[in-house]
Image (cartoon, rainbow, N blue to C red; front, side, top):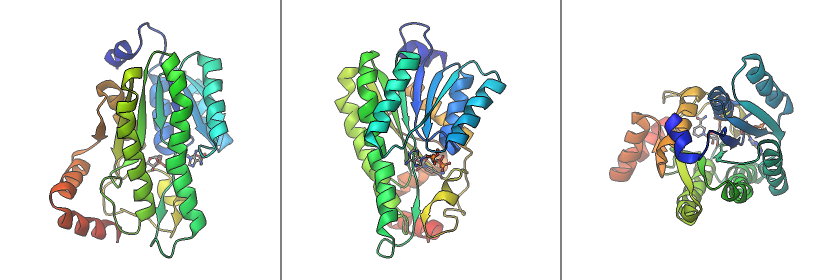
Length: 269
Ligand SMILES: NC(=O)c1ccc[n+]([C@@H]2O[C@H](COP(=O)([O-])OP(=O)(O)OC[C@H]3O[C@@H](n4cnc5c(N)ncnc54)[C@H](OP(=O)(O)O)[C@@H]3O)[C@@H](O)[C@H]2O)c1
């Protein structure tokens, strides 16, 4: 982690991160990890009570970092611009964006409610675009940075009855990989993180049909994924998976698409 600090920051100034969707799950675990490392972290979400509880936890545990909770909806471009302005006012710079806020959807495309489909696309695609467009000028002014887009193994490897969610993650995969080249001259790295099944509130909050998906696939903890985000910041890969079984699934999808399709039908069917 020290190595990363030296690589990104010319001085010993604390690193400043913006994590969207930090009121629960992966975003919350990442906020706690980075606060434990001494970073200054702006955390967004819509649930004020959860954000406040996170800030209090960091204070109670006397973690060396700081949390700035900001109530902001990622689908609102002005709210994301305001979030970055508040971050600069509080911490003077922005080094890292973790574009994490997201929502799932389950069910057959044709039977799905349009309102649900729209919410997933607006949150998972527009949300990332608004976050990136707000963060990049601040990163440029800070001399560079790193954007980590929290995608899913279902981006490169879509499964049945999760088509809308898969499409939203495939969209941000493409966005992230194109941005990597676009922002190279600004010294802003972009990593797309292909996260596998993780035990968070994601399944309960998913739109569309109720019920757990991927219950046959072992889950990671949000803390494991947070550790993966920290590793991504150190290594700066283009894309990254966090465990061998997810890498194996993606490899099978590339080389044996028929087999992978049957496996996904078994997991998600
Ligand atoms: N869990 C998994 O199995 C899994 C697997 C692969 C990828 N992922 C991805 O990981 C990311 C985090 O999910 P999670 O598993 O940690 O689920 P989670 O516990 O439900 O967290 C989702 C976070 O996103 C925020 N959010 C949702 N809609 C938002 C909006 N319109 N504006 C602002 N914030 C919003 C939520 O905050 P508020 O509700 O307070 O706004 C919450 O903090 C998502 O992008 C998800 O697609 C998850």
